[in-house]
Image: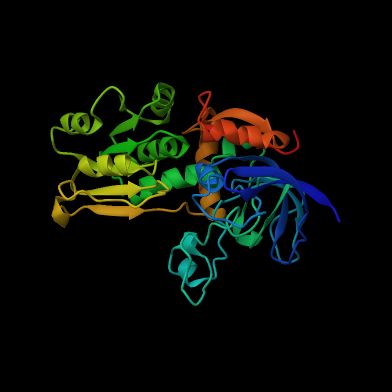
Length: 359
């Protein structure tokens, strides 16, 4: 039996590189040889035991690679072709998918649908921090990568870019809107870029790391606020003449950023929440106007599928946004434990780490 290297969850605090069998290919699957993948903040939640997955599961959900083998039912692709697949890889046959929520395509059980069910890589099936990954329902989930684009240019498409853009889309940003984006990690930076593409005239971003604020300007931010230097709620209300912002995007997953995003909203504004929360949220009465402010609070899980990936690749290929600056470090798969240590502790200005299984 042919074997491959894979980074697997052992127990809270331990992800290790082990040998696993290369998976067999079913009729609707594709086996993809991973050329580049990365580590996500969600993977860190898994590492810490804050999000439960099975022991021995291969982690990771952001694949760029080459088709090694195709299932007999998969049409329109060929072996040797460069592809990506979304972190969300729905079947497009479930009730959730057919109701327009393919990200929630988790299959039915006696207890109903599992939230985030469309997120299978590194959650319910083996993921992408390995030499190979098996892509299920490949007909609907593989997207070709044009020859002119590097792995690093499209590495954000499977998750980070799709998630950040979903935050801007869910916020229903209109031409001329004023938007605040809280946190400028990779998802927040992509949300900033998405807000710009949606037509926001003023984008105010908040973070505590100057390097990230500088990159945010490259992504389309007009005003950058360092929360270590200013009361950001007070400053945003001042900048908007007390009116508040049309939309606020929360991209970190903390009570403090969620609450600040709510406090700067205009009446009738939208809070678009992208953070992964590990504790209960509390909605402050005054900021919520006792429920009478016509506010909208909406959450998003990144859309997947080949059409979503095609559109994101088109944005990259157009040159309107350059996400290459988000890839700050590169590691071989053999060194993934060190890569996790760097990323989890946010050292050395890290944003995203390119993991190369065959470096």
